[in-house]
Image (cartoon, rainbow, N blue to C red; front, side, top):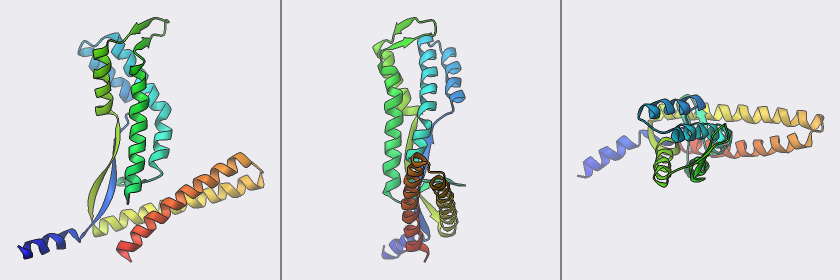
Length: 211
């Protein structure tokens, strides 16, 4: 029994835990493509119009969603990765934003067509659409175990990208200072601080496991 436990622990020690972002944020085109499938299943024009509205809403919040994700994750060749609970937190915030914003589209209880017509959405259809949103649009962090060398390579890639991001923002800060663009200066400084915090968390994680 002790030997078996030692074997398991020994095997696990060869792996490095990371968080990988799992998400489904289809493009506006793909979101609308869902409409053609629904139409074949005899959905009404109400559902078609709502699907188009959901696609448009998703596009309008996409940038802010990725900004939230970027506070805890770094985009690598493997995908978006995080090293601690900070990633889980920001994935949760992004997910809530998506669900809340898209749910508002259907909870208004009505659909307005281009010609000005307004049609009420049946209560049963609102509930069905709520479930569709929860199942088809999401962001979440999942824990994965990578081989030691693979994790090292991915983390070094993430650190390199973060350093480049800091350097780019530092250059923009200097340019904004020279041109006295105060609004841009404040934004670049704030962005740099966010990336620096993320860089420090990744660097601490890296040092703790590979130094």
